[in-house]
Every structure is written in structure tokens, then in C-alpha cells.
Image 1: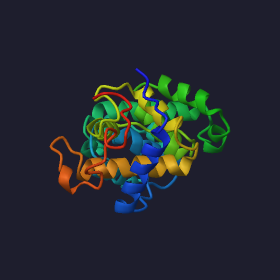
Image 2: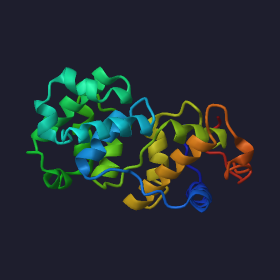
Image 3: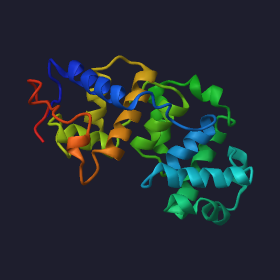
Image 4: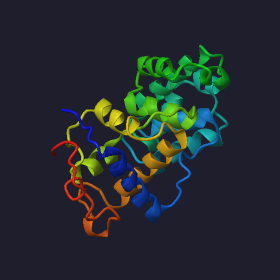
Length: 229
């Protein structure tokens, strides 16, 4: 089912403006350099940022937050250091595979940046443990490529405001944003971060609708329904 509608760009920008007016600039993703941001994107899978951040700090404490150090580190030891992120055995292996991929580029992020975005995404998705959300987070936040990241909060917020189905596919939602917003890395970065804030504070599993800045806003009220929920 198509999510496109003639008023889609305006609806999406209205949501952005409302959230930006409420939360302000987010400065996301927190991290020093491409490697740290990418490690964070992997560690935050199935957990919150605070848990992932603690795991990153543990790696920093031992001066291990480099591709070579992580490759050389015993996998069990790596897992023990990132326990706060949860699923630490799997995530240790994911980090190992990711760092092997980096080795193909001689750990040189400048070389990676020169690659075509579509090709890079395909490569990232071929790395064990890297799914669409993680790959797109690396592309957007570490490599500053104009790729919109879709997560649980995005789907939940749009569906609760009658802008998509709760079960809408990742690719469809990503297309919705990327075909109706300017192809700007800074906009995609800010928009995704604002949706995360709205999801964390208001659009939780048990929502706090009346306190939410988007309270009263939905596709029906705006004369459009992109896809029935």
C-alpha cells in the first residue's frame, strides 16, 4: 500500500517543526569519531543508550576503542567489558565482524566516505549482526550520508497519528521520509533524534498523549491519511 499523498511533505515538516519547537536541537549522535559512533550503533541494539554508553566508556577506560584493539581482544574478554549493553556475547561477535569489515578499508574512514551510499549500505548489511537500522545509523551519523533511520519510535509515532500502519515495513517508511523531505543529512539527523526524544518521553508503550507536543495532530485532522493504522 502506498504511503504517498499530495500533502505528505507538509505533514512531515509540520511534525518536525512541532518537535523541534518543543525539544530544540539534539546534537545527536553522541560520540567522538566514526569508530565510536559505529560501535555505539551496534551496542544500542535492543537496549537504551545509557546501557550502550556505559559499555563504550568501559572500552575507553582500557584504551580499547579502536578497530585494531577490538580485533586483537579475546572475544570473551570483549563480551565481559560490554555487559551493560546486554546480549553481550552476540554483540562482542558483531563488533568483531564489523572491525573485520573495517580492515578491508585499512581502518581508513576517509576511504569509506568516498564509496557510493547504496553500495556501502549493501556491504554493511552483509556484515553479520548488522541490520537495516544499525547500517543506516552508521551511514547517517558516522559517515554523514543522507539516509533516514527508522526505529520502533518512528513507526509507533506515525501509526498513532494515523500516518501509517503499525506493521508498516522498514523500507516503506524510509521511502516515505526520503522521497518527501529534502535530501539533507542534517535534517535527517535532527528529525530522527527528535522522534527518539518524543518516543522516549511521551510515545512509550503506555503513552502520555496529553503531555505530548504532537497531541491533537494526526493525518485525519490534517485532511490526509497516508495509510490506515
